Image 1 (tube, rainbow, N blue to C red):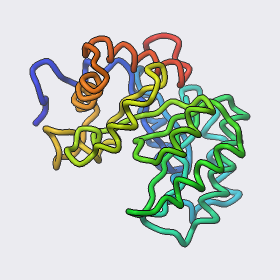
Image 2 (image 1 turned 90 degrees about the vertical axis):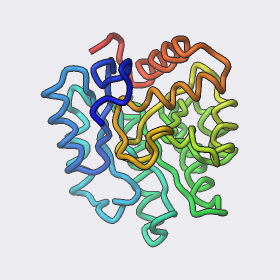
Image 3 (image 1 turned 60 degrees about the vertical axis):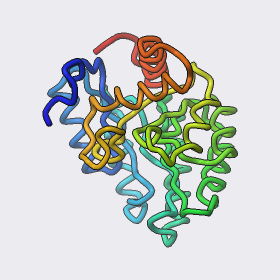
Length: 245
């Protein structure tokens, strides 16, 4: 379906941030920024691509990160759901990207996923963030534990919620969204994954973020328009976007 609702379309999205999670994807995101004035990019190395981490990749990403429309580093982080064999490389990559974000004064986008019933990835990620002490960042697609949330908030991070906020079995995520100060809240798509209800099971699209926003507004007992204004301003703040594209 090209447009999910008569009042909802991609044309109504003021600004988009395309996430470049490895060098090839970063280049694709940067190409979008050149073609579309309201698209910005991040540049980084996802923990699931940590096997790529090398001096050559570091040099490549550092060069790409200097592009004018790069507003963040990442997504980086820790992921033990898919592969724990690259644990050390994941942590080294995360430390390096935290340092790069600090040196370039950009937000770092943090991915953290653990195996069901485990919190090792959450604990390792929280420890890395505390050790780095960098204050500008986003806990992306948040589904972590209390320690990770408290660590991010104490450092000054924003916390972003995706379509899984709308799922029936996501009470823990909704509890987290209830605790985040309004001035730190963000919404996202994580497209093409995690399509929100009522689009669950279909490829996600940028405009579907409106469904997640609606659930977040209800959760925080605020009018939809107010929550939209809050999250839009928060995104501009953390990414350093001082005016619409």
